[in-house]
Length: 151
Image (cartoon, helix red, strand yellow):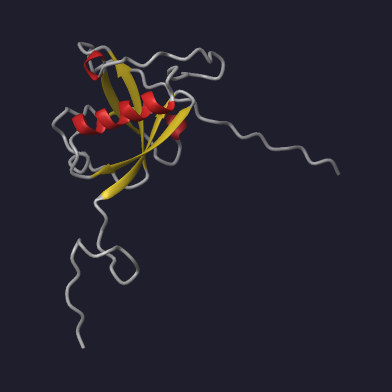
């Protein structure tokens, strides 16, 4: 007996391995990492709106760029008062190697920029009229120190 074809209306489980159009993206700024669920067909305008809403809800006092300078940078109250730039890691296996600007336009889509589930993006908060070319993506990478064994 041949099973009927599966549709997206059916719940996803091991019997229904339909690809989920929702992915998780790890967004990094300073000492913060935010996990955001996004749809692959979202524009970066929608993606940015969701990110800013999440940041305002989770970090009402702002974001800290580093442990050495924990003074939070306040988040703009309105989406029109800020532009968000995004960057991909130069080496996804070593975030300390830096970031390359994604140069995403508001009309670009998540799938159009080839973002995959659990990918990592750095973001920077810019003035609405700031230039995209000289963006500094500030991400503090944790350093794990090995414990000394007392033998």
